Length: 353
Ligand code: AMP
Image (cartoon, rainbow, N blue to C red; front, side, top):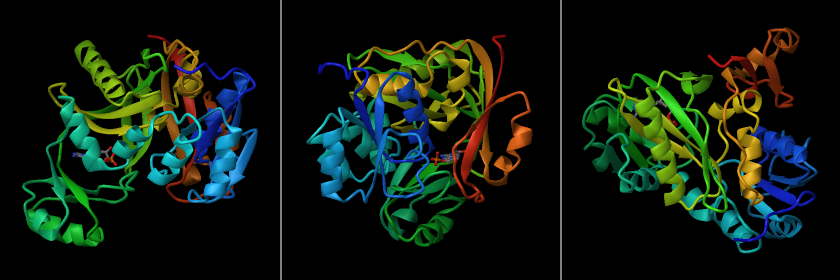
């Protein structure tokens, strides 16, 4: 184990969205500097990081300078190109590791990995050709293997014929067909693994989506004690299986009988963990920075019940009213409001029930 990055050291972050912004704010509170690398000039993370690099993810000169300026590097989105991750990892500690990135950016590799741990996933089938699509049986969700998010790159299909049409509409790119799960509700578990192999998890929230985008996360969730134990087992198995360092999230479908089915793994802090900023002493952002810096993990205990609601598009327009609604307002500094764009969130907390 390498020695921890001391206060004053620099954590590099590949990706400059709101997650980089909130990671940077947490790092600053610990006396750590951040260097955000992003290919978009208006990256919300640039505004609050100690330093930033605006360059393409394929620019090896810029990446070399960035790696040279950082004591450890992490990423805040799973579509960082594999070559970028490999280049950075050859120069400075990359946490989480390249394998975690490779597995979670491809839905087929990810599902095979989850199944190999003996954990439940929806039944799935690799769809590389129209002939494969014709093998789809029963109501399913056809998803592109790569680059899907918030319901993008996926289609609900009821029959094999619909699967063939949807496969063509998705551009004939490699896909996975998952059997539709008639779940009771969705939940997630946000957990962390330290560089010493230690493990810490937050209470699993109950998640409600609108138009395929997370709308609300609530803790405590209605999960039974047994299901919550199972969620911990799932997170621990995945963390160990990936030899993971940092915070990650596991999105879960909760069956009507309480069974937990793994939907996907996010190798980063997660939207359904934003409530930890106000309901825990150590938020998911601080926890991730601690892990990446090689510090001991903080206490993930929740001191309050919480509801987190996303502000999508126009919902963030009336920031004056949102400032007075009794919640803690978090805005990401995005200049243009666009439909479907995550602009901020509000956390409401109440004494733990
Ligand atoms: P994903 O991008 O895989 O997280 O999917 C986005 C959302 O689509 C999920 O949060 C679910 O609401 C829904 N969904 C995805 N896969 C399935 C499935 N196999 N069965 C039922 N609903 C699904």
